[in-house]
Length: 391
Image 1: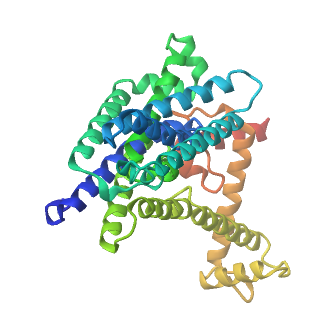
Image 2: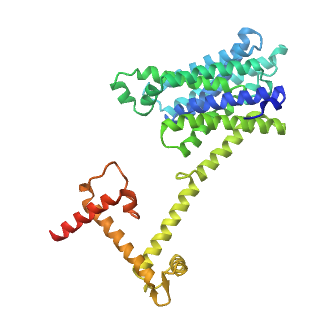
Image 3: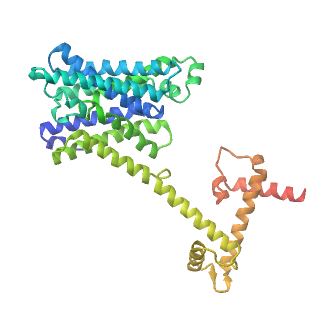
């Protein structure tokens, strides 16, 4: 268990706030990212600035709950305005996002400048909502964040099936009687909640990273939405805790450090994730190319060498004892026979595969048909192939 008790009070509050932010934004941001609406989160985050300023002007004091209510109202108005502009049918979604983002953020900067020009001493620190100021968090702020995040996560848990169906197939969701429009508005509202929770920690400008990064990492590590959703929350929590600890130890701004940690983890996942990472896929492609060259030499060992890859394939076969100066060794001949058998099986699959009775939807592997389909399927293929030859 993480030794929070060993940290000073201020650092403990910051870490807990980052934990709540990471967990909540990771889960709620998944819906925005998988709907390809990540930039909506960015626009909503920027749109909270005028809400903060208006709340300060109305209340006259820098009361955190009141400012967050202003941020939530402004974010919700911006989100609904984007949806309304998109549904006019004449403006593309990215254009609507750009218009709302620039308009609300410009209004926020104007209001912030106006407030800064007044003699009100209480206005100091409002600009921190741009880049966040986690060091200014109080225990009461974290409690408010935890309550908001907990309610939002409970809503997601209670409506998970309906939200998932609407997320991936809104037409089907409508056909089975789900209130698609209301569920889409709810998903947007949940996004606003995530932004409001994070705007004090990482700020309006960087908040989009906390919505996107956890889902990017989770999507690299898992295929099914059932796993992606909780995994994104875990990744967000890890990013928040790690970033806040590094920031407090190095006396650096918390928000940017949290985002940098998230960025580093996302880059590592994109490069190294098993099965999906760029380097993983490059390695698999290189292995496949080497296998093709090796098979070509086994089929025609006497063919002249034409490339460096051909030379390397022959060297590999010599090290494996399959090739010598006189051609294929006995082991090489057995390997060549196995290769010919695999190719014959694949040809049989292409010709008779539709007639093979499989117990489930298995994916055939051309390089290992027996391993991917099973012995029974291979036996059926041999019978079908023999029958075809007799016919």
